[in-house]
Length: 195
Length: 98
Image (cartoon, rainbow over all chains, first blue to last red):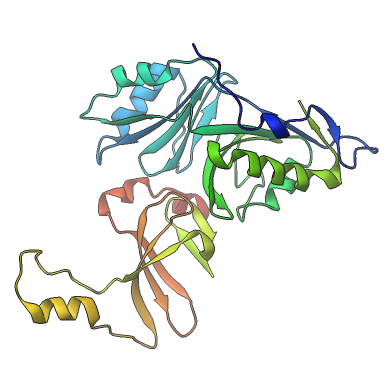
């Protein structure tokens, strides 16, 4: 396979930055999943699509709007009625779903080259994200595995909570570098490390 | 102003796009009834009070919503999916009440 270049590369500086004398409270990295796929069910076919997701990823979607789960390798979450984002460290997810999701069930869109996945973790992750997005990041309102679709200055973002203090943010690849810069600036005051 | 999206929960109005008056009924595209078309394009109730509106959650789940907003107070008294068959996925509301 062709090696995929990161849009963050010119601004991706590994190491500690900002006000980190008293410790690093934010970890930033790019997860670089091999596959990012968007699935949409036709009206009434949602249950069949959820079953197809389970058969391909072995991940069970919890009931509820924005519900999702992650096993550290594969991730899935709902971002709109009948629509789901699935990511996998390995490539080939779109091909697997093209077999499982028949045209009668819904659609499969391969976004592997269209989105950039940024991971923000650490005790201040909620606090930094709260500066960006007008949604509730508290654990009871945004449980582990759940996904949210929202926007920062008209840049659409899908956020999945993959840990108590860890979030994966999927942004358009073409906006990823400026979003990354903004995220670095926002993390400066608490000290951040790029890994 | 907050709009409680049936899928996403309460969100700031900046995430939404106004899609116009929800009272309009589009004539048959083949219709030659110019009065009906004129009414569809130009006639508005402009009420001082509750108003049926269509909004899109463009900065979120991107669904279209039927919203009743009070034009005097901006109070939102009801939000529902325009597409009725989405109602089964409106589970956030039940979570909020719990």
